[in-house]
Structure formats: C-alpha cells, structure tokens
Length: 357
Image 1 (spheres, rainbow, N blue to C red):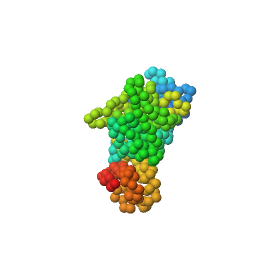
Image 2: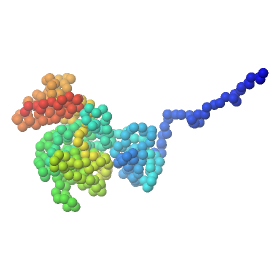
Image 3: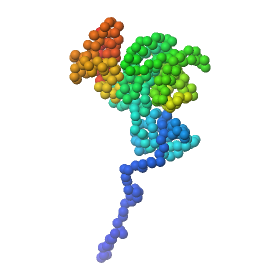
Image 4: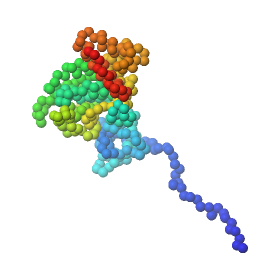
C-alpha cells in the first residue's frame, strides 16, 4: 500500500493579484499644474489659453482627465493642466481640475426637461442680441434670458440690432427701467464699407468684463462679434423670407478676446437658439428677473402668493388696475402677462389668458 503524501506550505498555490501596489482612492495633487482658460470645445478636445493675460500666455490643446468623470468643461472655465502645455504641434495637455466657478449659465431643452446643460462659466453678463425687425423681436425670449441671467448671478444687457428697420423706443422703455442695460445698433453699407453705428456704446458696456452673447439666428449676433473681434471671422447668414427665421451660422461656443481694451475683455459667442428652457430655475426666483414686479409683489401680495393668474388677491392684478391711463395699464398688463407665461411654462401648466386692458 502506497503511503499517503504529506503536504506542506510549498504545495499551496497563491493566486496572483492584479498588482503589487495597494488600491487607493487618493488622487494625485498635481501641485505642478498650470492654470488655463478654456476658449473652445471641439469633439473632446479643448482649446485653452495658458497663463491668460500673463507674460507667458500661449495657446494649447487639452483633453479631459478620466478622474473628472462626466463633469462638463465649457468655454470660460478656469482649469488646471498637466502634461505638455507648450502648444506646439502634436502636443496634448490634460485637464485635471476645474476651478470653482463664479457664475454658471445653464439652459434646458424646454421647461420640463430635467437635464440641464451648462453653456458658459465665469461670465459677468449675458448679452441678449435681438433684432428690432427681420426677424421680429420676441419679448418672451428676452424675458427668459433675463431670468436665466439673474438666476446665474449675472447682469443682463440687451443689444438691439437693425435699428434702421424699426424704432427701438418700445423695447428700450420696457427693459431699461427694470435694470437691463440697453444698447442700440444698426448697420450701414456692406462688405468692407460696412459701418455699425452704436458700436462705441457696446464697447463701453463690455469693457473689462466677460460677456456671453445669445440670440436667435439671423439677429446679427455674428456681425457684432466680427465687429468687436475682426480676427474672429464668424460666419454670418440671412433670414429666410418664408419662415422669418435665421440659419444657424455658429456651431459651437467660443471665447474671443476683444482687442485694444485697457482691461481684459472677452466675448463668448454661442450658437443661435430658438428656445431657452428654464427647468433648472427655481420658480421662486423667476420674479427676480422682473424687478418692477418684484417690488409690487413684496409690498402688496399676501403671504404665500404664487403670483399666478388664478392667485387670489395677487398684488400684481391690483397694480395693473391702478394704472393712471390706458397706455400705462397696457404696459403693466404686458409685463405681468410675460412673467406669468414664463411661470406657467416652467410649472408645466397651461398659459394664462392675457390680462384685460
């Protein structure tokens, strides 16, 4: 009979591990990272300006590090880079951190879409470019942009174009009294002889700030950008005579520095939009976009008032009725109607009927 074999520790097989280094959630500090500003995004590659406005300013291309996950990097972001940030052909840096943002401009596809999209970071003001004619101005779109700007902690500037085709007085009167700065421009001539009147006022409103321009296609947004930054050469389009709408000419947001300014001045051009969803905006904050109505509501509305069309004893209705004449009553009613339509759309309820008067 064969004796049974005696086993010892040499017969134990140890399954090899995946590596000798223990796993850790601690990420590298990247203490040697360089600060840069994101100026453009194109299919997973980011155009950045390293040491912006500093002595070693240079342009480079970067990719997003895996540890950032789904965090969205947008024009205007300040980021930290590692790797080759020389900007030479074929080099690629890596974005390892997004610096805390001062402001974030967001929008959604509509007022019920739960997915919000970050458009621009660290902008000081939202410039709402609106044509006075061809295409016709849409005041509710303006109001939505103003609401988004205030929700983001930004100022709002209304840039009215094509003043040679229509009188800007009505829109100026509607928005200037409620804290929205207004500049008016119009174009004369064509080609190299083109002159844009009102450009000095726009330069003054943008000086020393980072401004993001939004507007419908065909309103003249790219024309303004090309006048502010001649090297930009943004494509311009025309308005369809059948639909009254413009053709999208800008396909991605891009940050451009305005030359010959005493202080660093940036404009961020964005693709033309047909809607500006406010699903991300707290309904309680919408009233802040209408400073005149907010004063009335704070003074005359009962506690817990929703300010909707069916709200009992709402001070906004009393304010409309207390107007001194028909013209003032109509202007007040239009403001209340605009606010309530945005509120109804945001809440997913049917639009209210326009107030009488």
